[in-house]
Amino acid sequence: MIFIVGMFIVMGIFNFASQNRLVSSEEDMARQVHYTMASTTAMSALEMAGQVIVLNQSENFRDDGDIWESNLEHGSVSVLMNRSGNNIQLVSTGITQGVTATVIGEYQLRLDGNMPILEGAVGIYSKDLAFRISGSSFMISGCDHLPGVATNPNCDDAVLGIAVNQEDHYNTIEDNLNNNQKGRIQGSEGSDEDDEDFSVGIVENDGSFIDEAIDYFGGMVDENVDGYFNVNDETFLGSHTNPKVIRVRNGGTLRVSSSDSGSGVIIVDPGAELDVRGNFTYRGLIIVQGKADLTRGNMHLYGGMLVGGEEPEIQIYESSLDLRGNINIRYSSEVMDFLDERFSANSGNRRLVLQQIYQ
Image (cartoon, rainbow, N blue to C red; front, side, top):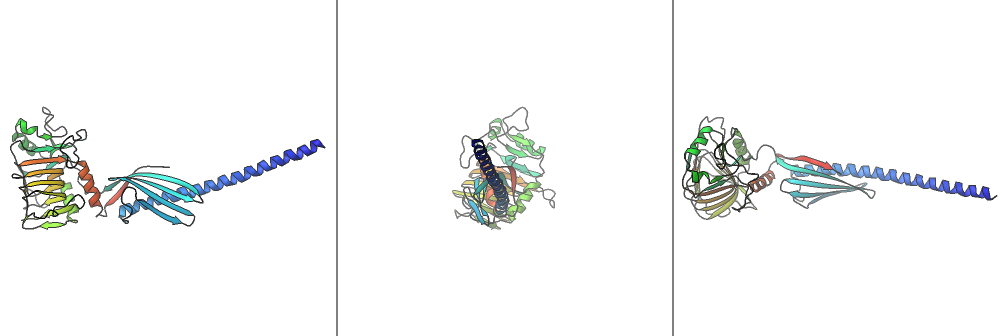
């Protein structure tokens, strides 16, 4: 009798354990299904958030710490943006029936083929060039500077001080400089094997990218200069919070003759002139296809300067670069990244390039 009762007790415990395992198995299966749904939702939201960024559709989802979220029939989803310049991390969290899944994507926001990549603090890509330089009050540095900071640049990631695509231009610059002046052009190693500190190098780029950049920025011009214009408004040349694209068109002269500052892009067309005579600090990109007269000014440029281009309808034209003033041109990747970010917000040519994705 004791044996039979014991058997019933054992069988009851076995059945109870089996039922518990069955319930536990069903719960695990349901949890797995819900996790899969949450994970799929998170992945889909990641892709949707990327489209929102690329298409620039939301004022509330552009900066570091912004959250894009949506409530769904079976749960909810949210995407947190961690952003540093054009480096973006999206943390997407999907929730289904209380089960949470997170997917993380790391991206770079890029502009297709329009923002020029600088090979030097000054890049000269003109077929014909009038280049003048004198004295030792100038500084052209391809080391990477923080905006507005002349000291302690990062020279490990330097570009050339001056990049040229014509050997004649290289010879013109080298022949017109003494050793002291050559030491005022700094950056990565140039083309002179006997003088590694002379940062002027010959590059292979044909300069067509400059014309592409002009076409791109030409669609975002804030101010056109057609005749003679003397800057007398401190907001005319843009600011860090409101960078501008200024275009000096054929026959126009943009004169800076007082203590001015600005930020953005200045385009000097063939037949136009940029005339700097005052104290001028600019954070941005200056593109010269006409004349840049910097002989009488005290100019500090953080960003870069491009001279020339590849005009298909103009076989030969002259760009003039006169650096006989107190000129300081310092490359700044931070300025270029800033321009890329700010002006790409006005363009449909944005894309996210996936670096990695993980859960």
